[in-house]
Length: 70
Image (cartoon, rainbow, N blue to C red; front, top):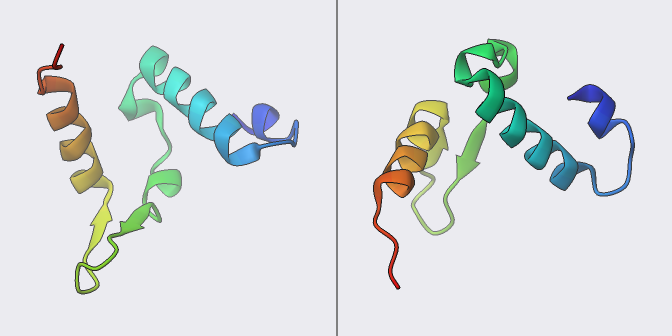
């Protein structure tokens, strides 16, 4: 993961793609806790509500189960 990010360029995109692929291969349990503990996503116009890792996992699960249109 660090080697991919250290390549420079668009590091946030590189990190997301690399992390997604690593997660698909190794599973969420392989992600070090010190990488996920500070993870949070402030929601705009939500009165200060912030999503933390368990919320983000639930959201991802909901998106996977949602049927696609078309």
